[in-house]
Length: 110
Image 1 (cartoon, rainbow, N blue to C red):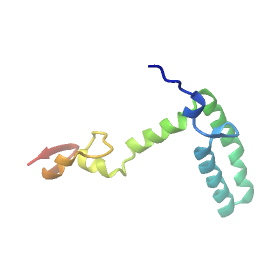
Image 2 (cartoon, rainbow, N blue to C red; image 1 turned 30 degrees about the horizontal axis):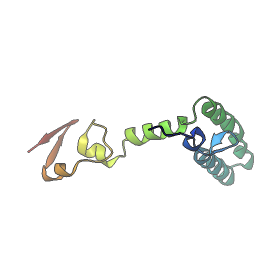
Image 3 (tube, rainbow, N blue to C red; image 1 turned 90 degrees about the vertical axis):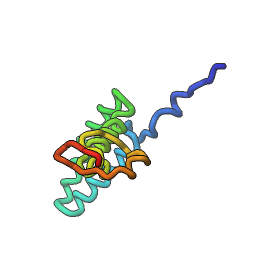
Image 4 (cartoon, helix red, strand yellow; image 1 turned 180 degrees about the vertical axis):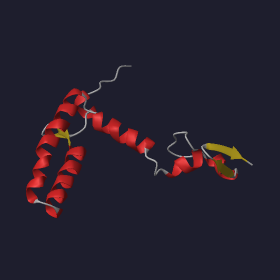
């Protein structure tokens, strides 16, 4: 059985050549930067838009990949406290029964 994949439906929504979510985040950041500091500092969004446009021209999912990388490697993740250097989005249900003691970067079960 063959299924048709419409590639236009698999791509992220784009506005001015940049995916909408990163574009809006950059726009809000530049707006608030201009609002709280000198107004012409908001013009920094133009070269940032051009950089984002060039990045997304080569790969549509580059900002999704950057977001996943940051989500998995940020030190503020609660799971890093449980698992140490292991990258995990959620601990398994059976791990709650085992008490863990953090010893440096190693985890030992008792």
